[in-house]
Image (cartoon, rainbow, N blue to C red; front, side, top):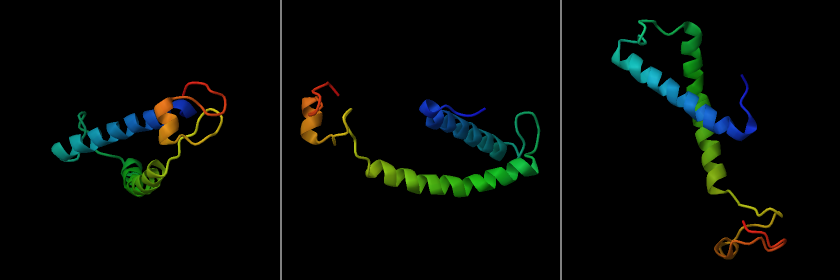
Length: 95
């Protein structure tokens, strides 16, 4: 099932945490899950591919978060002064 745009990152984060829990469980149980099953070849390949995807995400997300410019409802950049006042300088709505 596809993720809705408003919760894509939250849902993916929860799924990634589930994958980490599964890997940790397998590390503790000689590569078996709680039901005694080994990882399928397809799942193993996906796990390997996730390494590259995770590294790319880390690089992109880090760049995005440190360079994020917040905008008001009218598209004005939120400066320290605008944040302190808490009002959009264009329409005078609270932000």
